[in-house]
Image (cartoon, rainbow, N blue to C red; front, side, top):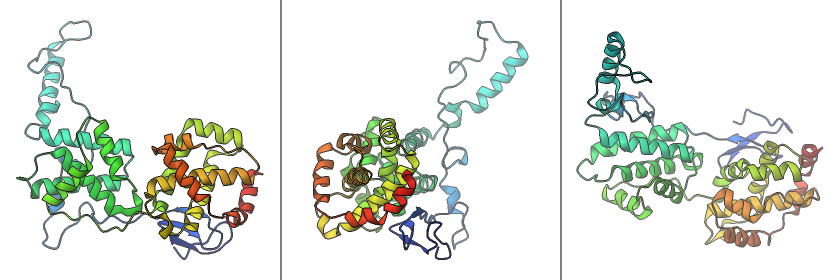
Length: 343
């Protein structure tokens, strides 16, 4: 990365807290994506292709069809058109073959539990917007632990949630999901998954959580800003209050959040959870931005709380603490960039 130069000032681009930033002006140039520890198709030292053992239905590791119905009723092999008339003999034969070889009950016979679990897991992936690399790793771990601890596994849905948690922790800042978010998503789908049950399962299977280090509020900045700027209400307020593109606002908000959090030492953050603290930094950043351009702020505590799923009183308490620090030099540092953005 040191061979790349900043488009703004021509200085070196360095990696800081999982992002590529300019060493001089602080312009953010994107997130650092780490290579996965697991590669599909890789061959271990013992020359056995173990990855082939951990596949789902039809050897499709990450994709499971959401279609769950067969053609007609289960025992019916006489097919009718939309008007109720029988199809001709030639078409009847085609549909019989199709039903015999492609209907779902036949495809998942003997693997119904796997199929149901993977469908649930794919829905969780979609709701949490999990990257494809994390999806592959999660499904690999699910199949791996299911086979290694076959006699100990009694709840496959819980095992899938544990596999997702381990994959997220392995990836560190590349997928900053919290345990609470994973549990809440499973529960919203009607499955009784609890944080203590996940940790108990890890202990029963003697699985150690990856030592990715303690999560910091900086790890959640990009996700927080994305959630905020995705809200239609907030988008409308940004355009009305600041008269700038939402994408430009999001980049400025990211930079201000990182600068604010950099100003607050870790020792002063004791007792404050990193995700809500990061959400509060976005509210403070918007206040500083509004003050700089002499405008009313686009974000309110309620809007930030709703878009990030953090309690409003938590945003308020953390914001009051953050305002006890001086950020005047931060605003001065990016004033030129702000001026060019708002011209």
